[in-house]
Length: 226
Ligand code: SF4
Image (cartoon, rainbow, N blue to C red):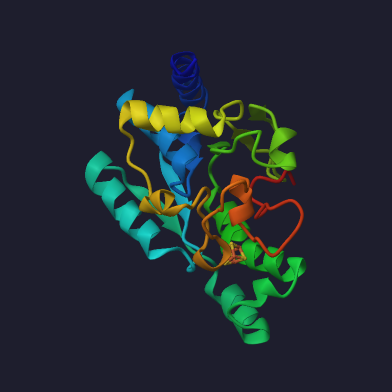
């Protein structure tokens, strides 16, 4: 089963690279799913640049991992940061950890630290690749493999792992010896910003480790259609 999915993944990456050329980019947080996509592209010499958002609140382990990726794959990753004025204003008005106070505050922080930097960095691109899986959230379940006109600029979003399960991802990682963030070995099932991500307990879903004080969508906004 995983062999079939691997082949489909490689074919899709080739197809979209041929269709969009240098107007295609992968958006990665270097989670397990993102690494599957980057690895599949890399071993098949499918050149797709990578953009990643450094929110300023990432785990130290994630920074170490990004450094490691560069030395192993030789990948040059474009790291994008929040707008300093927007961030200063947020911190001045609400403090550094306002996201714990309400969903609105949390979404505001994600907007400033993730969504706005992503939108800025996608200028010049017509399509981008995301590592979401349909079984992660309700929003993702309603996504499709290729999402045309995903944002207000009419970009296409491609979700190559939409039909993959968590076990597919880890089967691929083990089979292909893909490197991964060491936080997974410490009980993290999904890795985001340090103050908003925790390891999951037995019986919890992988998204339970994200914004655990909230009920609801558990989305930062970048994978939500505008
Ligand atoms: S995950 Fe947390 S720290 Fe990171 S941008 Fe969202 S609210 Fe802010």
